[in-house]
Length: 205
Picture 1 (cartoon, rainbow, N blue to C red):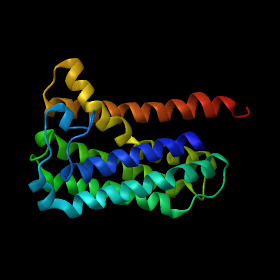
Picture 2 (picture 1 turned 135 degrees about the horizontal axis):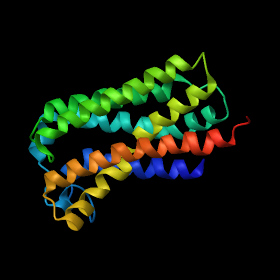
Picture 3 (picture 1 turned 90 degrees about the vertical axis):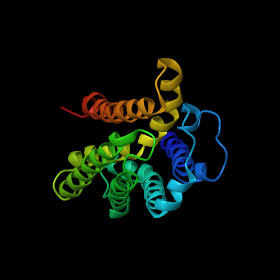
């Protein structure tokens, strides 16, 4: 699935820049949240760098393992534990990052709730995929799709922050909150559409 591999690589670039590199290099065009008017705070990274690195590493693993896992699920082939373990690790690391950063990052006090909500939903998707694995091939396929859709969130979340800032005249905090909310809902909606309008309609009756 070449298109998914390209999407994963692009998302990995966003994750590595957003959660590690931006604290050490200057802002890049369309890089969030600097382009939205919120420069990176190196002291924040220094204080909580294990959480930033842990999330970036786990998210990278989920994105690398996602396309082959999804390809296997779509072929009704067994899906190994590595992808689901990476998703669970990214969810937990993100929740820890939200707790440690608290209201000090862009997005303010709302962001820990985003990270906590993402962790909860992602872990439920992982648990449902593992539960479905020995029981129902279509169910495993569907929950694997949802897991990968959540792994791809950085691809649309952070690059859209400066767009919300420029198009709607939002503050940096407002732009980040809007971006994460819209991306969350959009990714799950697209995954739902793909499952029920594409895969299910092609299935034999």
